[in-house]
Length: 415
Image (tube, rainbow, N blue to C red):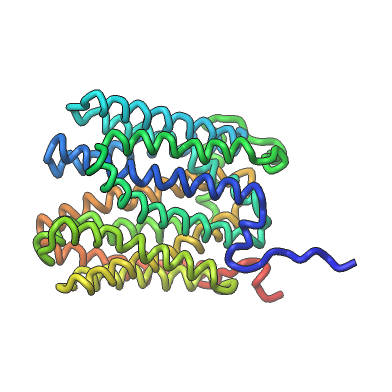
């Protein structure tokens, strides 16, 4: 009898029921999350009218991530990943509902908004590693790249749709309804998690105990895996030096001289480019020399940042920012795939939590660096110098990490 035909193509991962359920639930939930993240900044600005207060929102989210990321990684390897995600989603849903009700009653101070940012970051420290570690249990190894690409598509779609919906809701209903709708959106992913078959939740043999030793084991694994170290370092340096979007308000006002509408379009440009990049990755055939493509993608990210910094045309600036989104998405999909394929399931949660510190910490610290340089040398030189530094970082890692240049998936490597 002929063997059953395996699913193929860019949407292959959607053939698998459990992944399909989780992906659909996350699309709805992510739109709500993106609405709230943008609304928080708007709300803080409305209450304080202080740039420093706006920057403090990022700091409020960074501190819990640094404190709990390693713990969340150990928990993702030691506990039922589905239940861990359910707990985190329930916490953030309750927090969003509480903030919405408080806003309806008349919120007058900014500190609750910082508390929400911190609580959400703390929950993400547990949910993020569990979600990424769960992914290989939902699709076969050969469909992992498709699943990562589809996740990226949903994330970028939410990053475009969420802020647009947020603006309309605030104008017509008020900011409280953004928070309340976000709380409701969590029901989609919670329902999906409850519907996933228990067979997909099989645990690895001898899961670690939640302990300091288990966290050290994860750190030791990453430290001795030079491919992972080079990828994390590349991610950190690129986002640290090329955090151009943090200076968008100043660039729009002082360089391009466009109003809030123009600023909004520029803010959406990276997500538009990232969505195009994710679609291209989903349609592309399997990439053999993934290490080389990652390096070229990060170099393109730096070059697009330089182009944005020297642009004096709104159209050119939009295209350059979209270019950063395309390059970042190509790099992200490949880096996530490489990390998943090279990490044992028993350590996947801890590896993800360590990586979170790099890919979340880089942009947060980069915003501070970009602001300091902008105050010293000006907005344009801050952006351009960051892009140039990113290019130099790629060149340095290319020379120092030949194993990254040579990397290709095992099934693609010549025998």
